[in-house]
Length: 272
Image (cartoon, rainbow, N blue to C red; front, side):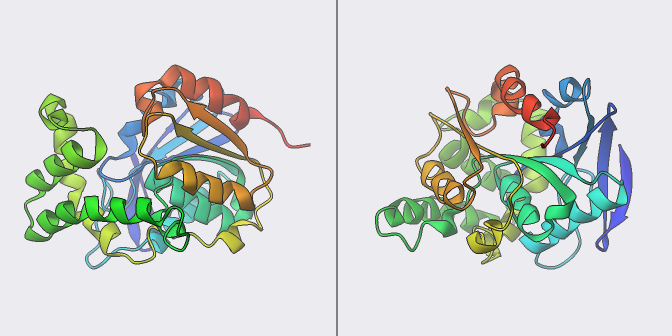
């Protein structure tokens, strides 16, 4: 992997392929390697850039409380620094919130977006119909946050995997290198939990983005994601929707063939 200095920090990234640029933005707890099952295939048609977000993988972890705004500025700096604009940007989980925020703030850098299950719980708290879902999500994360606050990142990662991400006993079934990635990146998830703006999104600003958008979810994911995607779709009338069957929260890992079938044509599509 190479390194770029941007927005006051160093980001590690990998470039594959040639052609129109595609940038992959990973979610919480993981790093750029979470795209490894789809990046080589995308690179047969495009210039594909995956990177480790600040505080993840091999990228720097600046001291102090991080913010979602830094993540957005990092992504903008990466696209500008590597001369990728306008790029098709794919985000997964928290990377989807970063992608959506970039489209709202810097639309000139983006020629299209594909986002899977942004954890925008902040979009639900003002709606009495879905507020119980938002509160349940927050309550489910409180024990994980409490353990993270103690600095026991191994226990916090195990608790997150077994009670939030995958289900009881899943931690013990993960390969040791995957568990190591979760533990290494745990402090940055605590930053996200402490950041009051992290789970939100300015829908008014996002509505000014008129480029192509693909919003996806999975039919076996937690119930929060459907209402979040509905609210985003309401301000992006041009958005396409897709529901994966049984792919969960990371279809690029669990069903890479379907992810490529759905995403690649959009990444290659030329605007009229």
